[in-house]
Image (cartoon, rainbow over the protein chains, first blue to last red):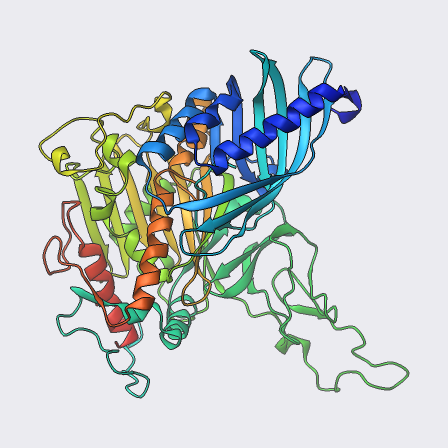
Length: 165
Length: 416
């Protein structure tokens, strides 16, 4: 992210489009429609899920690390077709983004999130809380993530991280 | 090594006996018994065992510290002018934790409660109001600070990794591991400067022994894990060695990468997926950096599982958190002299393992299901005769010898 002072206020229609994209994203991953998930990313995207601890220390490892759309699609395929996991109901609660327009024409946004999961034999519990650090660009009349860093607050992941954040 | 303890028969309820077949059966009650769990913590994590506590490169300067865990006991690993010290994270005064952060840098160790302060070696240096106030209060005249330091643990450093034990009688670290395991260990930690690439942690709702078994069980890896099977990293027709070490205390496995090929055995692997195609093959692209095409997995009991799967290197630190919970704390690492390609491969291939790894998440998901059933059916037993009924090294993945050997060792140690 560049310095926030360099960001210009986001026009209201872009702000609405951004919020709408975030809600559609949350719906796709919550519904387990993993093949819809890569549609939100650019070809040259970077998608990472990592702890606050790793992020603050600038460490390269992340729990999920996808460099480029090919890796995002590979994970979507693995979750859809091959990986064995317990069924669960997921719920993304996504806050209002704090976003601005960079001089290069892309949107930079910081957005709090809460992910709640209900396993097949249990009640909903907090899976993860954290912040999205996004770079969003216009593409084909819609918006796409060029970067989505999901930086979570958890000390530990509860059992497994199955659905994308 | 200590002698096995006698069985406390007053503690055994009906059915809490080991099946008479011996180590080819594993009774489910051992995963849910609180009393047995407490004895395991004392005997293994608090006894004659070396536990992993960190990497030297995590403590770059004098005063650098990390908090870590040996079973349920928290300890502080800290560097001073003379090297690495490991002390209990427990004030000698009232047992309060001294370090509340997971890592940082300090000049001395000071307890927040009453500000007793200790040197980086754990020696007591300062006790506020020791002489009292206006002639009142204070410590007795015979108070001897030399007798109230932090409890200091024995420390071993090998190839950049740090180990500690509460025991004065445990053999030296290399003897504890034995020659075979030490050679496997030195392959990964030859003394080249290490580089920690990051951490992952997960809390799995299962008894810690179920995790130990899972990582000593190549049989499941050939069947459950589609990625391993399809891309040949661990597969039943690999050249493979499963070796119990030091009487079943530790274990060492390795497999030679087979690559993606169809053989007579793949027909029996339901999860061999002809259709599974990756768009980015670097996820499973094994660059043969050790020159032996091996994928390796070693367990240094009780605290770690060390894995090299293709080019992703990690120490999985096993931290029991109650009889039915185990924390896995993963430290991913590489070497300082890694080139750009190796750095990228380690980062990408980490998607195979860890809490969100397309291979490892299958294990954590499975372990939750196992724990539910060992609790619900405490009278049940597991049957582990794949590969025979003995505990000898086997050159196959179709074997449960690792589990049999572990329970051979475990029963002797625990007297059950």
